[in-house]
Structures are given as structure tokens and as C-alpha cells.
Image 1: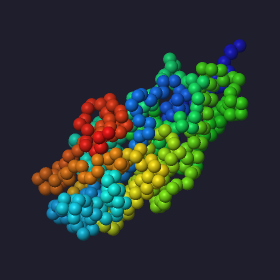
Image 2: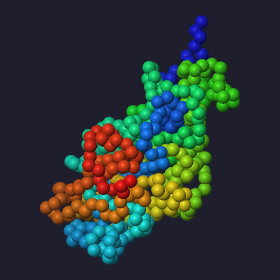
Image 3: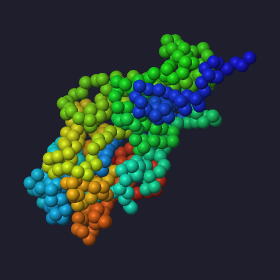
Image 4: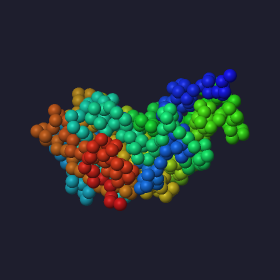
Length: 453
């Protein structure tokens, strides 16, 4: 008679990883949650390391503006005659623009509805990087976003943040069978039980997809909970035993049952911890809106002390092919959401005394064409501005605005002047204390966007 336990024969590790860990949030891919919740987020797994020099108190928040944000009406070159000539119906006037510098002598400012960002700028918390893009730009939303997510011009491979998790802070040791090796005697604490990357949304972005570690994503913390016993009937009794008595007789050390049960425990600890964090009250006033709600959840998780290194949020609706408007209209409303949300986020972080720990990066997959179209909108373009926010940022306008002279355009589009991967290199090397060459595949000159430590 075989001495294998019923759970071993009924449900193998491969079955579990293939068919597995069901959560109320349908957005969570099984491997993503397994890897980050049951592997990377807890020191209970062998090989999990935090190499010397990796700052656990440094947090990166990525804000993705999906749809291709119109950079020319975000960071406005109101001093350039070419801008007003190309956009007679949707240009932001000099009177409307929120001007940088003394009396706006540089001829550049912000959209009038970005007063929240301007407030942070005036506090010395915003760096504006103009003309950000990459060689041979792609005007497909999906392809261009994949290029930004992978930091690879072929738009293939693992995500740049996933590669950071794998190589720098959260790598996981593997046993001979290829499954994560665990240490049953290692202590689990709330501080350990947080994934290295959390995305608020329906799916984890490709940027957080690694080989060993992938991002956790959820839209609603209330629905983010473990319902593992429903995965397979053979898990119900052992899982109940684990929670009631701290162990199960048939789950001998090193067995499939042992792996499954400890995975279940880690998953429950993680989901409980995140839901508890998001249930706490905030310390400041927040506006309504999709982005504000996402950033509010991020601020609550930061306040709760999660050791998550990277948070990822997004705001959609930037594909403004028609009815874009200038100071008022569809794009203006999105600018207002972005500005008020970021302002509230840093007010909350300051109230928590966590503002010095959090660097935010705001980007979109591409900008829009210089010339407005016949529908008073804009079509897919190329280079666009990127914002960095936080006390560690080199404040001000960091790079020059690309030329808008017809002879300097690329088939009607702005030519990029800053490779986005040079910004990534600065964030990776100077803030996350990683190895940007290892993550990005080659060395890039670091953009001068952060203060020297």
C-alpha cells in the first residue's frame, strides 16, 4: 500500500500551480498570486533575500496615464508660436497656463487644471522631464505600452519591475523539483507578509511580471480574500486543520500537502493584512475619482507598514481623438483628476510622515501629434513629458521642450530628447538601489532627475 497521503495523490503541486489559488478578485492570475503572496512576500521561503544596500524604506509609486496623454496640453509650450498655430481650437493660452519660473519667462507651464501638480511644484516636490520617448517610436497603444513595461524596444520579455524583483530584492530559491523551497520553522509576521509589488486594477501590469515574482493586483480590497478550500475538496479538511491546530497530520514536511497548506496560510495572511490596511481611516481629505481612490488605498497600505517596494496605479481615458478641448473639456477633466489626486496623496503621506519614503513617477505610453485633427482632438504621437514627484526629486523643469519647428518634427511628431530608460536607470540605481544594467539589459546614462544622496 502506498504511504502517500490522500492530498498528495489527489492534488499535486503542478495541479495547484496550474489550476489553482482562487480569489474573489478575478483579476488575480494564479501564478501572480502564488509567486508574490506565497513566495516572494514572505521570508518563510528559502532563498528570499534582501541584499545589503537595498533600502526597505524606499517606495516607488508608478502612475500610468493610459491611452496616450496629450503632452503638449499637459506641459504647455505657450511661448512657442508653432504650438498655437497647430492647435487653433484646443491650445492652452498663455493667460490660462500655470507658468513655470518667474513670470513664465521660459514660455512653458502646466495645464490650468493641473493646479494640484503646480502646488507640489511650488513646494519643490516635482521634476518635469520633457520630450521623453524612445527610438523608432511605435504608435500602437499596446505595443508602445509593452515597450515601456519591458524597457525593451522589441516589446518582449519580462517586465522591468519584475526583473528588478527577481534580480535585486525578492529572488526565491528553487529546489530540485523546481518548486519553491520552504522553511517551516521560519517565523511569519505581518511585516513580512506583503508582496514586493501591488497594482490597483483589474490586472497586474506587464511591468511587474517577472520569472520568479509577479505582481498582485486587485480592484477592491474588500473582495481580495482567500477562498482556497473551494479550489479542491482535498484541501478543505487539511486547511481547516492548519488553522485550528496549526498543522495537519497528513501534511508531512516536504510533501505536496505541506507545500499547499503553507501556501494557503501565506495567502490568507496576505489578503487579511491588505484588507485590514485599506480599512483604516486616512489622515487628510481626499477628492472623489478613480485615481484618488487608488492612491488612497496605496497610502493606507504604506501607513500600515507593508514592505511592498512598488505600487502601480492607472488612470484611463487619454485617447482624445475628438472633443479634447483646451482649458475645459475631456482632457481638462482628466488633468484635474491627476492634479487633485497627486496633491491629496502627498498631503496624506506628509501627515503620516512617510512623504520622504515615496517617489512617484507619472507617465503615458506616448504623446499626441502636434497638429490637432478635424474633430478638435489629437491623434497618436510620440514624445511626451514625464513627472517625478517627491522630496528626493531634483525639482523644476529638468529638460528642454522639444522643438516644434516644422523642420525639426518627425513626420509631424515631436522628436524625443530623453530616453525613458535613462529615467528608469536613475530610479533603479539611485532610489531602489538596484543594478539598472542587469534589469535593463545594458547601461544607460542616468537622467539627472534625483537629488544626490
